[in-house]
Image (tube, rainbow, N blue to C red; front, top):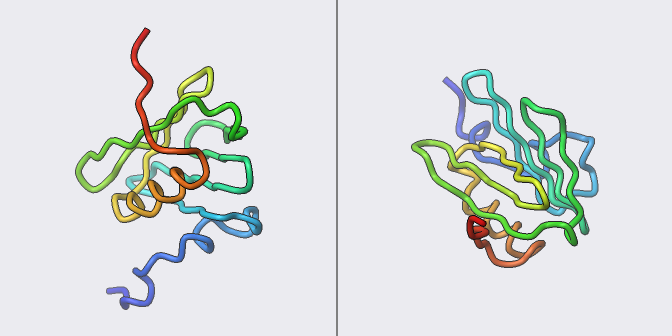
Length: 111
């Protein structure tokens, strides 16, 4: 059993040294599926089972989060739709970081 010191998330350390200048970062591995996000000045980096996606803040049209049990999906629209699945414990902090960096969440209406 892990001690509580291993359970408390430190968002900047979870993403690893590749994101030293991150304002916010978190990552999840659950049932063999990995998802990560990193918010830096003017840039959002999404990682997961697909190749890493780097999106400029100016290109992000909308974003939203959808809870599902112990996880949530963060979707970002910027010409194409990108999504990443993270543990629910990161949802509140992710929403705050995304709002501060890219404006309030809103789901783009279907065309």
